[in-house]
Image (cartoon, rainbow, N blue to C red; front, side, top):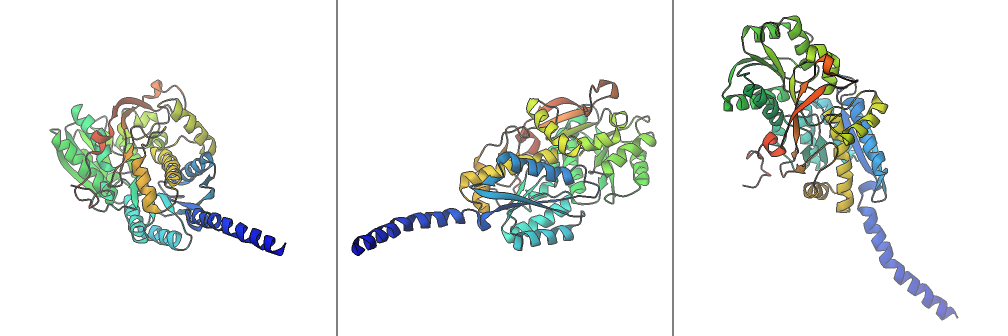
Length: 407
């Protein structure tokens, strides 16, 4: 009898061993048994309405819509304020990757901040997906296998807006440029498009980021007599420039302004009376179709404003990141990135999307014009969609400066 019991115990142990090994492998698929995403954003500064709490809400919506788990393990979110300072953002990123075991950082407004965090992600071999970092150098000379640019870059905005304005007769430009990486990248890419299409750049003036007074810079732009004053900046400088332009009689004098980066929250802050007629390029508009309206209304219930392209992009990227973990069977950064490149990206945010080897997510964009007050039929009805721009045309080919690009 004792021999039978011993035999039964031995058989049970033998049969259980492979199952235990399989369980151990399964547990190792997700590092630390949790997928942790950090929303690194501007929670209180000039980009807070366009990113900030809205980006955090969008990320949480994505986690909730995915079911709160991936491969049976919980997905959690943390957030922090960069204060729009590269050193502070880099310090937070190091803490998150090294100590808090964050698997992915998202959002990261202001290009100089995004580039600083990219350096940390590359050094720590952890994933970073930016949405509000626009400099084309991110996926160009600074490209990294761990860093992804999801929503836009300066080249795409320049192609959409500058090309359209030149074709409409706006063939002489003067740039009002924010003096940091994003602003200079935007001016550079727009200037190239303008000259390629037969236009001329008469000059530019650089101003500090979030400067309290743009008056002297506006006067220089006005004195240039350029047909178009290109606003190569993001919030809050772009909004302030348009407001001051109206006060200084820019439009009455026959000059126009082109916002190379304008977000729907900027238009809301300006009001249609001041912003009417502006041309801009965007990756997303909440009122494009039934899918964008359905998601945006859910978002509105949480933050009381319609989403910017950056905030909608946060949701899109988090959902696709979790799908890629599921497909890869692991949260290993390079394996997840490989799956993201394999998978088509098609959702309410992105049409004809694909992740290139240089880390840029290419997708279709829209050229829109801000409506006149009388043409707006309901709250946040701000844009008339003029045309859709295919992703390959808007973003152009990968930069040969990126070492990840194969010849």
